[in-house]
Amino acid sequence: MDVKPLTRDELAEVLREDRQAVEAARLEGIKYFRLPTLYATPSSGTVVLGQSWSGQSYTGQIIGPNEGYVWSIRRLAANGLGTGTSPDILNVYRNGTGVAPVWQLNGNNWGYSFGPAELLLMPGEKLIAASLGSLVATVQVTLTGDAIEVPVAMIGKLVT
Image (cartoon, rainbow, N blue to C red; front, side, top):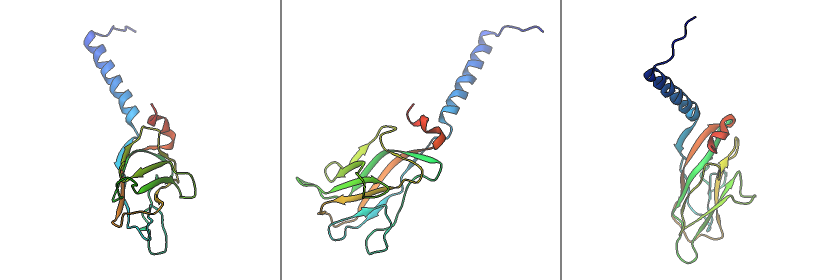
């Protein structure tokens, strides 16, 4: 069987196709999206976002990755918090307020961006935010953000 050497143009085409295949595999399964907005109006000087409650306060929006997926939170921003020398504080949690917060926003520093693996939500985890101390704000408080979603098996794509 005769094997002919590739011409320069043929080799360049093979290498280009190989680079495209590698890039497509790297991006496969990665989904960028904007988080659904969490919102609630403070009641008795407190507010909780992203947690169901059958009382008169929480709005019940619950957000988090579906089973089998991981979210890399890339940006969070809070709106409606009081500003000044003692700004309103909003703690950010995974799953509930009974644990240590993973981040903190306030009326003066209301938006943050995160690196690929700084703020991850694993399957079954939910994003929750709650006021710390008594709020000055009486208007609706919102939490918005951006995230990247990958299947759990591809979590390494978030950190490479």
